[in-house]
Image (cartoon, rainbow, N blue to C red; front, side, top):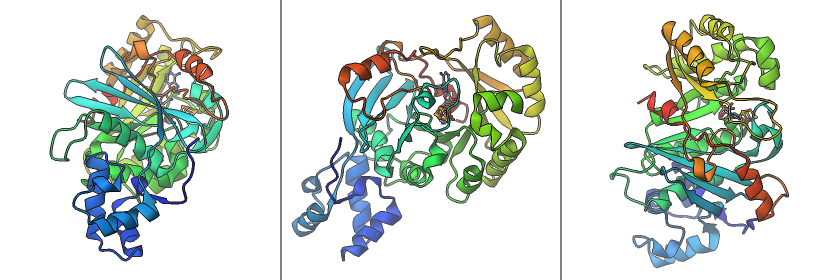
Length: 382
Ligand code: SAH
Ligand code: SF4
């Protein structure tokens, strides 16, 4: 467990918060930009390395502040270039971050919570229950760690991380303030300078927070649909009982139209054998989505022990895709990446609560299959 030092952690501060911090210690606001560049562009965690900051100020910063990311427990690199980090957050739990390279694009899949309270029936993160919200520093810290592993570069140089998807562990909209702050840093030129089209928040459908989101930020939105009617969705995604489909899709359409430009919602649909993968489901989905500008990303189920579900056959997946395609939808199917390192974005286990023994964690991680590919979600909007 990372010990709290009582110092303010500058890693998670947005530009505005950083400026306020410098004012609060009697310094000029422009210092915020200098320090942010050191932190996010150069991956620095030591004030002494900040050569354009005078010694007196460096000492002042040293006494009041720190730059502290989550602790890296492991880093694995797959033969296909996929990378996976397990990081320990302040609550003692571990979460996972996955990087998927594809051509000129590099997508980082970031976690927002240790565990998740929403208990979707096919999700291994949900099976663990909720442990803690990540701080803004822990969310952006995952980008910071990944970026450093490629060798930090100034913002003007092409980056290894071109896209970020909030599709790791947790429901990002239930950790709203910290996730929004971190996404601001992802997009800020003094942070990671990633375009708003290339930062995507995925939600299972927390309607009031989707409505709130558009007041704060204009990132891309992905909706985890998984069922074309309320009866089935109530079983698979229990939060649907509170916020049913009609309300949910309206909220998503409102969010997208508030963006005020040509951007479409991404629909994620995990295909579960004999549960939601039949032609009648595709036909119902076509009807459901007819007024919602969207693209569809089908995710063949990634099995894990005792899940009670199976992945559909390739034929069933193709049949489902074809039906949507014939109805005019842009449909992609996620492919498998990072198999040799068990990198599984969207069904990450990490490890929550007090199960801190290394061996147990590796067993948990190994139980995952390997669908880490969120690249098609990302590429769809480029
Ligand atoms: N909580 C958010 C974001 C994280 S999950 C959400 O639910 O949208 C990212 C995606 O992976 C979601 O669409 C989720 O439903 C999907 N997913 C979860 N478990 C899965 C599994 N075992 N196989 C395939 N996709 C899964
Ligand atoms: Fe939580 Fe998303 Fe998993 Fe549902 S699919 S339990 S919302 S992480």
